[in-house]
Each structure stands twice: as structure tokens, then as C-alpha cells.
Length: 186
Image 1 (spheres, helix red, strand yellow):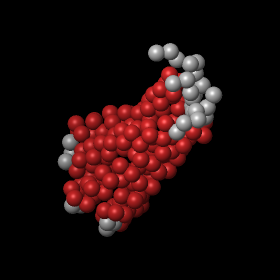
Image 2 (spheres, one colour):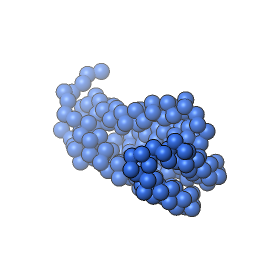
Image 3 (tube, helix red, strand yellow):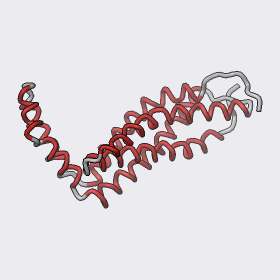
Image 4 (cartoon, helix red, strand yellow):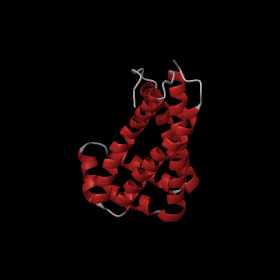
């Protein structure tokens, strides 16, 4: 039996907040790890990437369990609505974190450090040995163009990327949230 209530809609905002904070943590640990050459922050970034991949499925499973305990279940389309809403809240929260970083904290440090990494003699030599000298020049041009973008434009690029992946992930999280299971007892 599919649910007649819309209780799952309130969970999408709550769970989207958790997912958005996780995505924001991934972004901040990555940018700060690159900006300051901090290996521990990069390690934390990789760990948070794992959490960010598993968390939406775990939250979908948790909602499925809550609904099952209440004697109801979500249809696939309700699960899809829940997952899409959850990811949109996550995109908005992550976009706010990304914008705040580029507007108030960065001051061009990230692009400067990425350019310094790309211009290291060992990196240039490696690209030339692989026959990718032209691609190395293109990456330099891309970084120069990205450095000229405003904080808002950089945020929109990352938001669009998150939005695209959210649409794809919503299809799978909806399946987990609407999984048919036996009625659970407390």
C-alpha cells in the first residue's frame, strides 16, 4: 500500500541538509587541502567523498524503514520526489557554502595554487613526455579563464555539476526509498 500522507516531504529538507553539509565539507576540505598543500585535509576529503556517496542511500533506507514501521510505503514516484527534493536542498546548501568560500575566503588562492602545481617543472616535463604538451597549454588557458570568473559564476558552475549528478542519483535513491519490505514491528 502506498502512503496517502506527505510526511516524507518534511524528511527531504532534513536529509537534504545533511547531504548538503557533507558536500560542503568535501568542497572545503578539497579547496583548503589544495590551497595549503595539506595532505591531512586531502585525506579527510577522500573520506568525506565516501560518506557523501553512501549518505543519500542510507537516508533513503532510513525513510523506507520509518515508513514501514508506520505500516506504509512510498511508491517509486513518491520516492523519486523525495530523492529529488532532498538533493535540491543539498544543492542549495552546498551552493551557499561554495559562494561564501569564493566570495569571502578565497581571494584567488585556489587558482593561484592550482596554477603553481600545473607549472612545476616536473609536471611540465611529464606532460611533454606523454606527448600532451598541447593539453597542458589548454589546461593553463582554462585555469586563466576560471580565475577571471566571479564568485557567483564559479558557484553556478559547481551548482550545475551537482544538479546533474543529483538527477542521476535521484533515480537510484528513489528505488532504495521505495523498496518493498515486510511490515516491521517495533
